[in-house]
Amino acid sequence: MSAFALQDLIKPSLDLWLLAWVLGLVTVFSVLILLMLSGWFLSAAALAGMTALGAHTFNYLLPAAIIRTLAITRTAGRYGELMVSHHAIFHLLKVLRVKFFVALSAKPLTQQRTALQSGQHMHRLVSDIDTLNEFNLRFVSPWLMGTLTVLVMAGFLCWVLAGIGSLHWAVVTPLAGGLIGVLFVPMVLNRQGLAHAKRLAQNNENRRLALINPLSIITPLLLWGQWQKQTQPFINLDKNAQQQHWQAQKHRSIAMLIMQWGIMSVLLLMLLAIGLSMGHGHESINDMATPTALTTPSNLAHVNLTHVPFNIPLVVGLVLGLFGLNEVVLPLAQHYLAYGNATVAKQRLNDLLNQQQTTFLPTTPSPHTPLPNMPNAPLTAQLTNVTAKLPQALVGASNINATIRSGIPLIISGASGAGKSTLLACLAGELLPQTGNITLNGVNWYDYDWADQLGYLGQRLDIFDQSLANNLRLGNPNATDDELLTALDKVALSDWIASQPQGLETQLGEYGTLVSGGQARRIALARLLLKPRKVLLLDEPFAGLDAHTRQYVWQQLKAHQANGLLVIISHHQDDWQMNGANRGVDKLVVGKQMTKR
Image (cartoon, rainbow, N blue to C red; front, side):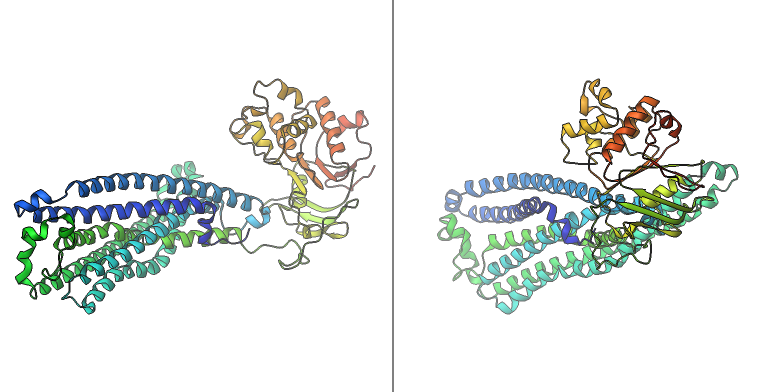
């Protein structure tokens, strides 16, 4: 999986985000226009009421209707924006979790075993993916709406003040520029938030691990009175996290205060400039209250600037609009860590999936070298002096020499702990061989791309709390119901599924608890058989089966893998020998030499 950028978080649901942004802008402008129109309406009505003629001619129905419409639009727009944006976020989280889980689970175990603990893997797959939604919800959307709103308000301010003839553009332009300059405060804070977010994320991960790790041995720690000592690192990290949160809150408060001061400064300077301009036309102010100026709403809204220095209703509306601007721009400072949190989460997830891979052998090709094509000719795998063991294991497979041929199954047996499963893990690419080499048709086994070409049934099964069909289709999402039934027949489950009232929709329960262990193992085996594969590696596929069922499944496996490689770990070879089932089978007893039939 290639590294992803933050912009990729928008692409899966771009249409939804565009709709959410449009609804958000409708909501924001509805709020501001509602405030400004209310201010205009109240002041205009007050001026109209100063004369008897104005009180009778002022049209109060139209502004009242517009105000009611804006109030409804604000509520509906806000609801729609929240609904659409949250739907887009939930879709994004689903896509990201599946994408990262598939990418991580597809990596060989040897590449998953890094300096990171399993708790760190889980923390990044859960918490970091959740954190990524802050990029859209708390960074992109607020900045888009805040920037457009400030620009529109700055333009409206210029238009209103330009109507005051005594105000020069040298006064108007700095006021508009000061309003736009308010955006630079959260912009600077966002850059500082990157380093803060990185420290906070690392501290949160360490704090989580410091609490979880001692829980596995909590009983002995309590018995020996060591619990307090072992949890002291967590307490220290928790205090550090609290200090970082307080520091972030301090930065938020200061930035929000500066932004409020900036807006209020623009407002006060604007009123001061308007007040000074009144000195040049004070003799005409009383003209605003004359019946001539208020005969129609149009005259009220657009006072004749040749007699009146400014339009009072518009100025009052502008003042209330500037007050309302705080609601739009303050979230930019309040969520100043959103960009940093999302950036750090992206880097940590990319680091998780793009760790420096440990090559199996020096001949493994570089990323720029094309992988060899999977051979279609009869396959022959050769194991030469292969030695491997699990990390921290006392014993493992040692000096294994074997040949695996197309159409001739290899049955592996041996004493418990001899290294049978370890050897199978090496063939599956889940474990590094310590010495020796493995080749396929003379080419290094690990040079091939085994995606969808190798099926591995280990000792641990993954059965999910879903229907039988959904569990099977994990092996082939495009499989039809007939193909599912055919795979179930190969593992001797056709009679069982026919007896189930829900058929393929039968629920298997969490971890497959609603079926027996043998059935769960055969369901996992059927999942592997839904796609043709060059290699099948099966660890105890016949566990829990009676002799007749073992024979049937064994014959089906041989027929299914007649043109590929089949390697099976099993302890039931004696039953096959009684029925001649071991004909055409190679056997490898770990700890002894391989025998061919």
